[in-house]
Image (tube, rainbow, N blue to C red; front, side, top):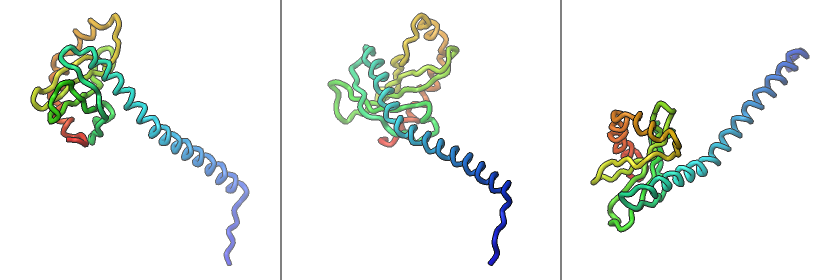
Length: 162
């Protein structure tokens, strides 16, 4: 029978590298676990912020219902929720979309409402811009808003409930 003779230095290196990679794997597993645990908290926080914006929307009364899964690479920048509209027929589907749009002040969370019949409506920003509110309103170009208004129906078609 053949025996492996490992030098003491090689054994020491194997132990060091095994320990190092074991620590990296353990931290990766912990990060994945914490990310999965925090996902629901993140979705609930977005729903609360969307509801806050919808409560200030003068057109109609909407209630945020449930988060819809988005099967797209945009899911890191877009969240879609089903909405319930007060005094509306049950067969009408309304969607609330919160989108991270670029601006001079950094990315801003814009809230839109979508319905197949009435189209896309911009509701407001899910952030308190304070003194910069006037600047934010002026510097977001109509091109950016038009882009997202065109994209939202396509995004909705990629949700799990469509």
